[in-house]
Length: 152
Image (cartoon, rainbow, N blue to C red):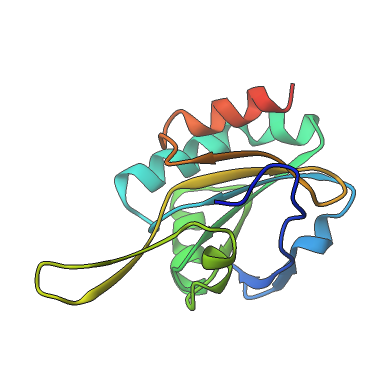
């Protein structure tokens, strides 16, 4: 996990509409950048829907929400449409941004295969692109409320 006070690594990924989005696109705004394992799973759906419900309040506080997972653009589009998500989902199938932000866990399965998974992590990035808060292994349902409180 990246440390508070460090510059957030720049990235460019495709969103759920196939549009390139870079962190620098949000310069001058606070960014809630959250990493999650997989679209349509119970924990990830709970977290995304909670961010969606609170999204107007995030916007009132001058923040945007960006969700990142290794899922495809098409998967993100289905996820957005099924749950009416009002924020941007970013596709990182190569897991390069996930790794750059220290949210990649590499291990070995019982069968001896290498597993690569995303640790549910959320960063608050200020208007200058500096990480001001970092939370690892967050609880999916509570994380959006926690992040909204951090903006107060």
